Image 1 (tube, rainbow, N blue to C red):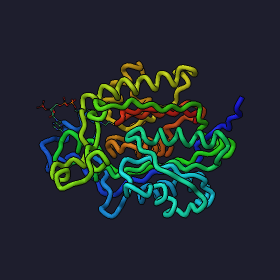
Image 2: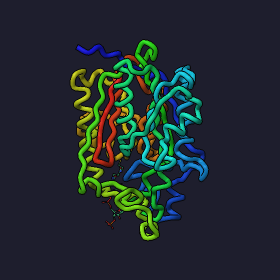
Image 3: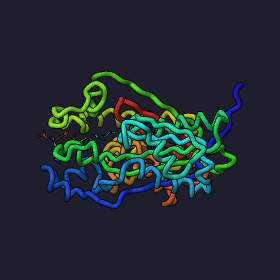
Image 4: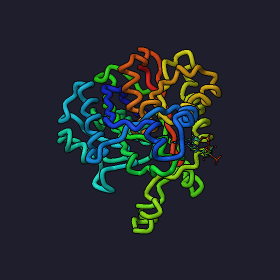
Length: 331
Ligand code: COA
């Protein structure tokens, strides 16, 4: 029998870049309207990082805020896990850049790329390290500069995505004092058909950067919106239902999911027979920020007093891969 150390969420932090890109701004770039975007997605505006602001820089700010919240010094961080689809460089990792920026001299670290599910995947990995007693202070960062891989001539995608960063510090529950992790899962289902649902085609080893790939804008995201929609609704509902099964719906305090799209949230709630206000949403302000969305939403839900003490809080995320996962905590 393995002795597992209970894990808790000791600190939360988020960062949103200053520049706002509103639906009205997008009306000037592509054939769309504020009304279409808001009705289909719930998004009013999103944030765009400054040209000299990379995802590592944003992640470092969120990380420092999570450490301040936990009252833990950067020198005491043992491990940094950075979830991102838009790292500063193909290598070295963003974890290295964040380590340098915050002065976490003792820490090891690495990046995890699982697109919109990335933060939950990194959270799950962090739990293993704390639970096993390997490390005490594990910083989990989700950060994205998606504006660098969005084609602002493609109305199918440019209305959805935004930039931002969020972070959590996981510690043994005795030190964290809150947010006991009860369960967490990660799943993937890959294949050529799944690639086509949501991907960036060029810039990797399959199709390296070339003048042709640049001209064809193959370094930007393509998305099969309807396929993502169907997958997201059923996966969201399934993750919430299965994670709550051992405890019962009456113990639920809030759902803080990947901020994918308000219509997806509403459709999933209908399947779950659950009121939509059980779900914390800030998608109207930030759009979909992939790996950053869960920690940004969690931090805001906490600040806005939307996480009832002693109740269950579930996060579910899903995205390219296909990939999906959850974590469930008692707040
Ligand atoms: N503004 C105006 N019209 C748009 C548009 C935009 N921004 N984007 C697409 N359209 C058009 C389409 O071209 C299509 O026109 P057509 O019928 O002349 O071809 C029409 O609107 C309907 O397109 P459709 O894809 O059926 O719309 P939809 O109701 O399914 O909504 C999404 C589109 C993208 C909002 C929806 O599929 C969705 O939310 N998908 C999930 C996306 C997501 O969350 N991705 C991230 C996953 S982690």
